[in-house]
Length: 299
Image (cartoon, rainbow, N blue to C red; front, side, top):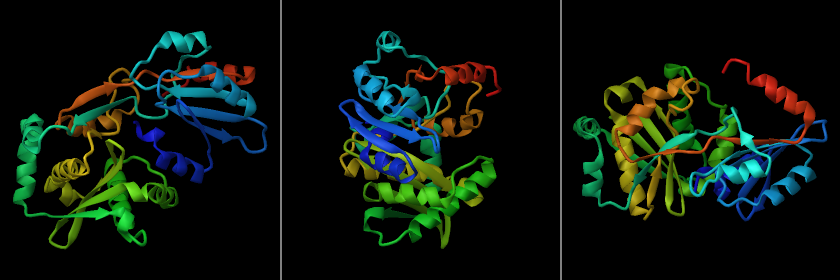
């Protein structure tokens, strides 16, 4: 099950202003537009088949301008979407490609599936005698450890020049996933140099976010932390590790900055998943014009 269909994710979106409707095929997220009697709706990685009649009922009740569905890859039939008035969209909200790593393998056999580069870098990182600390967030009484992680994340954004929301929004995400997530920290002596945040639900573990310092890169701590996360997930009896997004060559003009970390993730091999592209149904004639014009704007 994709992260965006976890109850924890639904709770997070409700905390940042979305209304959540539960259906048989998945969670539906509605964002009401202030001062206007209308909304926008998104459904991300729902279970197929989808009840399109139910979708139209929800759209009507919330006066939706449009609905965007980011389909699951299993049992997807574009013809069913077309018959219900959906067309493939140029708008994307979530990542369109990811990597699944099979954790059913023994630890020894899982290690063998990694690229030689990944295995070598893990060994080098181990040789640096880094201290690894695993934090079960469900046992934390406050957000002090999470604040340490967020500082690593902010450091990474400054090095790599990308944007993440502020701590207020991340704190709400922390609250929502607190009982289903772990932090993995790497220390060089007493210096915190890298961290990753891992969420889990049922049989899936998700690589939610990472943070690192220059020293962390030099010590290859990110490789070691992923390996530690794999081993922890196996102890939790989780079956799949979802790397939560890589660069998609089908959309070469989007997320160009993802290429570098995508290469990092690919070194752990696994199955590359390409999701069907977004499907949109527009209910409002005025928005239909805006949407048409948006196709000609720079990405």
